[in-house]
Amino acid sequence: MSVVETSWKHEFIPTNGINLHYVTQGEGPLMLMLHGFPEFWYSWRHQIQEFAKDFRVVALDLRGYNDSDKPKEQSAYVMDEFVADVKGVIQGLGYQKCVLVGHDWGGAIAWNFAYQYPDLVERLIVLNLPHPAKFAQSLRTPQQLLRSNYIFLFQLPFLPELLLQSLDYRAIEMALKGMAVNKNAFSPADIDAYKNAAAKRGAITAMLNYYRNIFQQKMFNQDWGVLEVPTLMIWGENDAALGKELTYGTAAYVRDLQIKYIPNCSHWVQQEQPELVNQYMRDFLLSLCISQL
Image 1 (cartoon, rainbow, N blue to C red):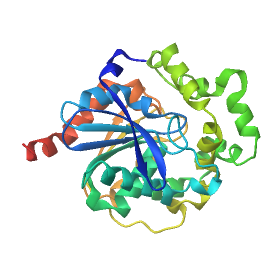
Image 2 (cartoon, rainbow, N blue to C red):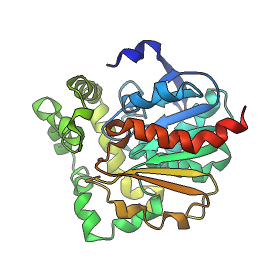
Image 3 (cartoon, rainbow, N blue to C red):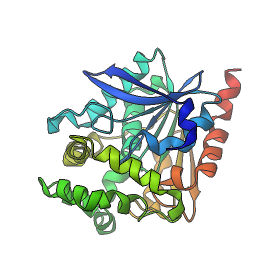
Image 4 (cartoon, rainbow, N blue to C red):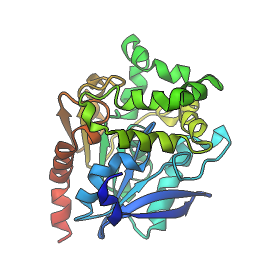
């Protein structure tokens, strides 16, 4: 892993009846980072050190991933539990609010958390995950159904686990490096880190259980109002799984919204274009930092 890991601290925190692992660096206001599938805290390796200059950065392993607890029951992997996990982390770390950053599944959790607990979110930053209402609408279109066909594969028992584990977790490498526009964004050591995290006992089934409960998630079963939390969306335009068009019309659901598109960049935006992502995040957060001086 990166040499900067020597300045990172690995900790555990109890929340919502489980223990979550996280990596942290820095002091100050809380910046809480939520990763996606099939990742873990390591997907934020290019952001942790950068934002530790001004924040206490905490990059979680979500429940079921890497070194966090992995409840065996499929029912443990639903949005209400994910949201409760995040609330417990913020409060358990001694904060009243945070800058919440999420990508992929972490983005879905961040959207839901900001709606449920807007007073706990100072700013919201979501990378390559549409507003839940837009995603629910998109799954009624043939184009997005085709792009999301893996979701339906993941509903099957046993077979998805076998496919992800086969050939030394080759599917993990193909999901990351195979989808990336800039293949150099993932070194062999990076790929090994993701494979090793997925190989931990119980992790693959836990990761898949997020998808096995997806059609019971709130984004498919509720009306969405207008979010009052200032929000930044960052979007890699060459996302093979989630089309750029899923961002269109988001302003109808968010009072204060900025969207930054990054061309020639895949779904793995913060890893593939870290300098640009960091700059967009920093510009968005500048007013917050000034207000706290």
